Image (cartoon, rainbow, N blue to C red; front, side):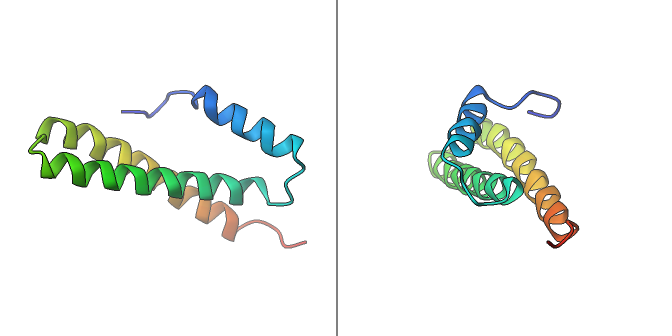
Length: 85
């Protein structure tokens, strides 16, 4: 389970590159897109593991999927509550 872990180094690199390219997207919107992509990747991995009868892998992937889903909910909430410019 990922709860309590620091974000992956690749994510830091992603943000540094996006910032250096002067992206006009709000950082929370970019993060939400990244997490939605991760959520979809986990969904597909779960389906593949289920098709292969890998219940042990499904359990691990489901936990990661749930973690990403929680982050997506939090990001959506933060975006809805942000001040409008």
